[in-house]
Length: 308
Image (tube, rainbow, N blue to C red; front, side, top):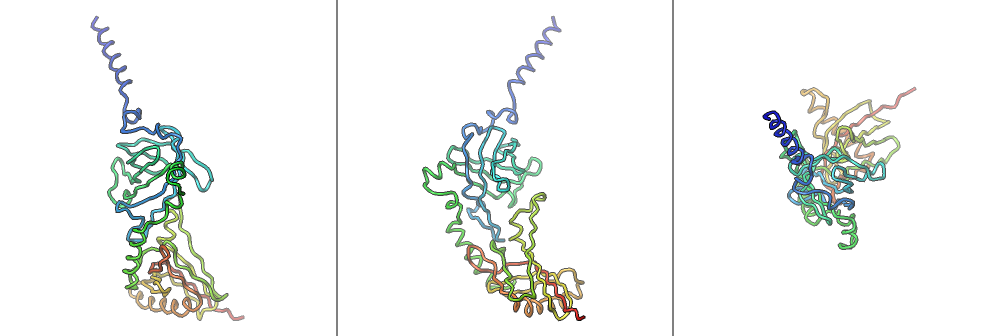
């Protein structure tokens, strides 16, 4: 009799645990489910820092670009520019209102048939980082809402705001007053050759495997300039500010001994002033069409003419 009671007790416990479920296994126990918005295609129309701006002081620009659609509770489709189609991703519930898909973590802040708001976050273990990596809010509008209610386009909604323009104008005025100051230009410096004896190459450092996005190419632009008829062979890699007038200001030279740094800097500045400035038209970096000081890494290689 006692043995039967024990068996019955354990049977009830197992049955009740099966019915209870958890937030991880049962979406209905969470703050919301994705079921009401399943099948609606959303376009990202703005991506902002918490201060409401698309830019930070370093010149990094948040660019809205995602197109997403909930396929089912655990599957999100996102537009792939490379494959030119919607690609499905497993959507894993993490904790709180945080989900993971497409190798990113998002905290869902708002969900409706017209719009979604996600906070893009950096998660370390179970802890959301409190730095700039989590300071990003993404707003999506349903494509039908954009077209039929707002009577506009996603591209129009994605444009920088008046507040963005005012911020960039202020930043430009500040850094342009000092040749040592700079911030990254979304349209980077251009070196336009004026002679056939010079060549320029802009180096791309994009590496998707290591999360180096296209933003690295304008945040940390790198160039190689080759000069075929130099007075002697030389090679210098420098950090330089190209000011709003297109003038190069060498800040330091890489791969030199400390005791030689100042002398090498003067030589590199002379090469920039004599060769680069005279053999290239230099267009300064711009953001929202406004020229401003920006920093680059520049490798200058000179080759002397070899006499037969």
